[in-house]
Length: 187
Length: 115
Image 1 (tube, chains in turn orange, blue):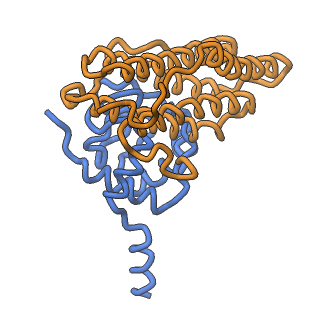
Image 2 (tube, rainbow over the protein chains, first blue to last red):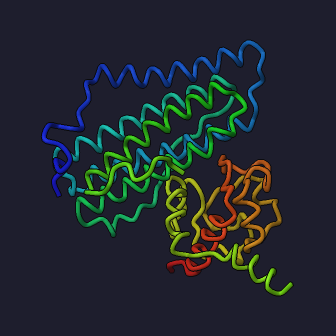
């Protein structure tokens, strides 16, 4: 499978500076939440739990992309794409962990071991499909978390991450030859 | 009356094929065969909540006293945090009763866990 199915020019490499600005937006939103909390709005334990569950899923996503990258099944530029998306998840981890700690919680670390269906990954398409399912699930998970936050700044930051996960999912679907945006809404 | 009852039953009858599509929403945290951020789902129906070996459940889930069947799953999936306050599943829930029925039908179809 060629990752270049969907574009004549390299579709995966965004300027690094632009990426940094986008992630800064998420970080600023989270820190804005902290400022609001510092001014008197109590950090609800439920918010911390939701953040920590998201953090756990982000750790798992990083591990999944590591398995994908080390599978030997991904060819450039798809390999670069996987590493890039893994980098996004690492940035999510950094922001989520710092936010949890600033809110007085303890950030969950990665598990010692993850179980992935590596025996079923035999081709590049298998790996892309595996990653696409994770990203689809991440979109749904953040969508299900956003309305639960008592702090609206945290909801905003989670929505920012949701958007990033949705872009990952769409790009992976396109790489698989699927409709990248199959519906007007995600669920 | 019987006809009305039948219509109600049909309205919430689950389709496992549609349920499999809905299950994709769970894919960031769950899998059928392995524990991930959330516990594995094979063999879910009939199992006591909080008892999958090797998974680190919240105290709330371990103490919930629930056994997973259509009724308890429907209530949990509609609003996890209301059904089990303190659960680590920070998810608003599935509002649509048909979608919940489809998802439960799919989970019922995944009864066996690998050895």
